[in-house]
Image (cartoon, rainbow, N blue to C red):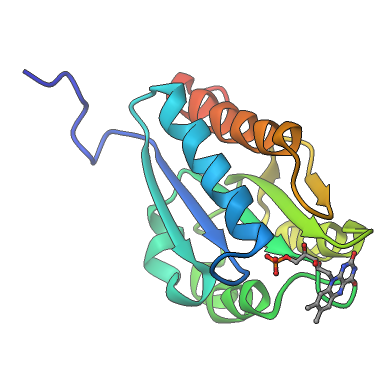
Amino acid sequence: MSSALPSSSRPHLLLIYAGHAGGRTHALVEAVKRGVADAGEDVELRALPALAAGIDDLLWASGLLIGTPEHFGYMAGAIKDFFDRTFYPVQGRVDGLPYAIFVSAGNDGSGAVASIERIALGYRWKPCAEALIVKGEPSVADLQRCAELGQTLSAGLALGVL
Ligand SMILES: Cc1cc2nc3c(=O)[nH]c(=O)nc-3n(C[C@H](O)[C@H](O)[C@H](O)COP(=O)(O)O)c2cc1C
């Protein structure tokens, strides 16, 4: 018999991401997902390309992970599009949502982080982990850091400490 909580009472972790199939950001996404699974917590993960995610997903979430490549010193357009589509419809209904960011960058990444953090302030979200920036090809250690980020969010939501 399964001891899993019903979906309605389980914490919900939404992971939205940009990047292309076979790219570096997707490798980070897979590592984060592995971390969530390995944490073994009773948390429901919904991982979606940002272009496929919307208002209902955001309102469903009790925690949010955002993964993006850095493009022109900014977040990827797909993440910005998600913000453009959801900001006003969810205003006042997602205050305090715990979130964290991970970025794949060529040699910087700070612009992507800063641009997301600025918009997250507008949503009144709460940062719950230091932004993770991976420069260049992800190493085994980088993927491990991503897995730990997934574990941290998952455990924090399950324990109700985020
Ligand atoms: C259009 C474009 C703009 C980019 N701009 C930046 C940038 O401003 N800073 C940076 O560090 N890397 C930049 N890069 C490099 C990517 O962030 C980096 O290669 C990243 O790992 C790509 O992730 P992906 O494989 O998931 O697409 C840019 C890449 C592209 C294609």
